[in-house]
Image (cartoon, rainbow, N blue to C red):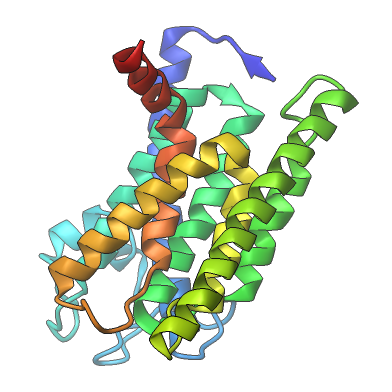
Length: 265
């Protein structure tokens, strides 16, 4: 379902989603950090990791607090990780950008939920080299919840579910087979099980056709990350590359494919 609205309304909703995205980015960053430190992200007030001071509203305004405090704790002067600001800006842009592409629709709601979870997955994987099964299950639940709203009838719903399942099996299963072969060849683990499951989950959303572009982008991003980080022979978190590739594919994949075909034909 897509609803046409006046330009002024679109601008207002986009601005509200920008602010909401920044707030979600702040929450996701905090939740991921607490998960990595085995802390509950549902209970307990936000506090400075250095001095333990409880943070007030003035310390927690997304984007603005970091800028006004110059990236330091107001109480002890300890540096606030720059990624807090980066994630808040990224999520704000993602929320507004998703609305700009898909408008007032169920697709927008679905992708906002998915992109939030993928961001959390990327952050946790960066810190722990693990991908939480709970977040993967949440992504799968989002796919199921929005299967029907994507279409106008049961036929559309079944077609999308079929395409999603094919994407999950082909890319998740294909990556699993490649990983098992590489494990034998290298004599060590070549890819974590979490990465394989993440490929399967994002395959639900990209489907069979879009999944190929997602896989290509993920591999290129992973190679660039490994080379830039100097980790040519060491394990590195692949989750952020997969998550980023999924976001780019879902947001811009159709346009990228159209432009590529235009070059050929």
